[in-house]
Image (cartoon, rainbow, N blue to C red; front, side, top):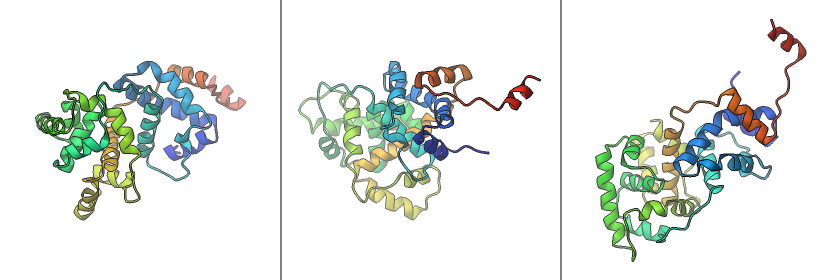
Length: 257
């Protein structure tokens, strides 16, 4: 029988050992990858303890949802538990949005993924675009941004990335699109008409550009990730106080043969 992500969420919400054991084995590698990318690898155990708290929001959804949606929400929770350094030169979302107004949707997304600390080669792989094309888009975006700010340097966008991401994530409205729309596009399940409708909204909505970009990031995050070894998983279960139920006596006896 297949144990789904939705069943895991239900079991973790109910604080069942099988749910937490599955989460540890399959999602700690993703958390580790996220922390390594965003520069806080040492925070793994602290982040896990925070996620395991009863008041943690990550397992509160009652609606069935795709695994990639869960991973995108997990990403937000992981980053929320890591320090957010103040940039030397602050850049707000309104200024960035005004600067990037002339860009197309694809260009805005290539620029926004820069706030997520992905270089041109990594972004190109995510967006199926040549790295040189990404570089040209970002060079143009830098010129646009330079004309809107008083203090400037080349890494201004990346330095403000986490702050811009938070602002975009909280700026959504009633017309913003659900994760399924973006996943359908990434999976090639959207009609041309559906894509046009999506683009009309997302082109002017930085909340949805951020949301779409996070879904693109998730696709890359899960690529090549393997579950923890039994020994590693046992360490994290001990950290969280997760005790697995012992198998029935007859199974233990059969296992000795």
